Length: 341
Ligand code: SF4
Ligand code: SF4
Ligand code: SF4
Ligand code: FES
Image (cartoon, rainbow, N blue to C red; front, side):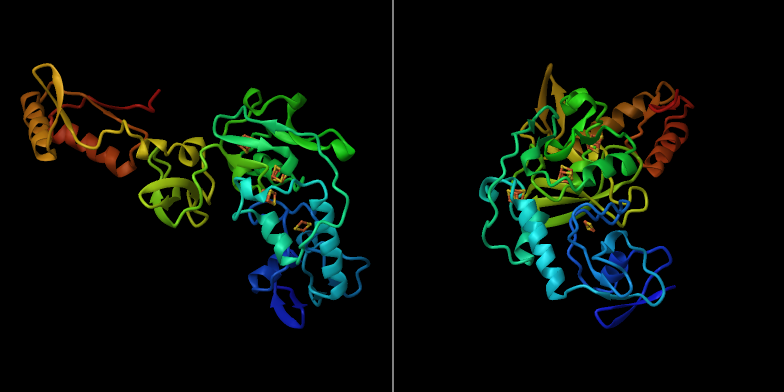
């Protein structure tokens, strides 16, 4: 375990940990934007620069491995000045429309600009060509707001392993895009939204953005038996968003398209909230007692002439119960599962 000194404080780093990771773990904040805990270091934004005794220049803390005896300074006037300059350059081609941006109040770029004390635009405005891609059914890409941090590219590569996007073109024309700069919907993108979840700016935003939640509720995704847990972001009784639960062993905070975006059914006006029983050819609302009594009596009538089809949406325990019910109660071995081929 190498021990380093950060701003005069002794910090124990895990072997292979970067200076940034060791400092953050010891509650010493170093500004960063292109760093994400679950992605490989990239060193794109240059906001995490530090001074390290014996090292030339201002190394990026996110891509410098902590080694025994390192002496690191994170907040000298020179560092803060360099970071402010970097931020001003980042903002020089960034639109000034936070108020109408769907990332407003949850934007890391906005927070970082405030942290660094940026309160005016000193540099001449550079116009980036508008690059808006609405082709994905679940999220939009507004690349005028992209800071080229590469978190989306790394998420698509390292987490999803789909590699639908990468840096394309060169110089000031560089942007993030799919193969041949085609719309995302025509690419190999599987709409998992990992890029969106990692993006620190309004360059990637949900189509169904309903505003900030007032609380989060931890639950398990309803779509399959993998058991990914997620936080439903709630405002009143309405689900306004979903975020993966990093503490969940099955998913480590990552979600697929269904878990991340498929929650509209919960608040949909067509959703059935009471059982319906067909009476005289028409479906009529009924109480749960009435519906369950009817189901139980019909099942009793059909003992031995029954087949159960279990579902991949159920947990192991629910599938076990269904086979037990089919064999022990319905007295038949006609039990199968939708995922069997
Ligand atoms: S991406 Fe962030 S900084 Fe840029 S306009 Fe949107 S909220 Fe403002
Ligand atoms: S939605 Fe998923 S597959 Fe599509 S670009 Fe983003 S990370 Fe890649
Ligand atoms: S789209 Fe977002 S995550 Fe991707 S490079 Fe741009 S700012 Fe970074
Ligand atoms: S966080 Fe280190 S360079 Fe971006």
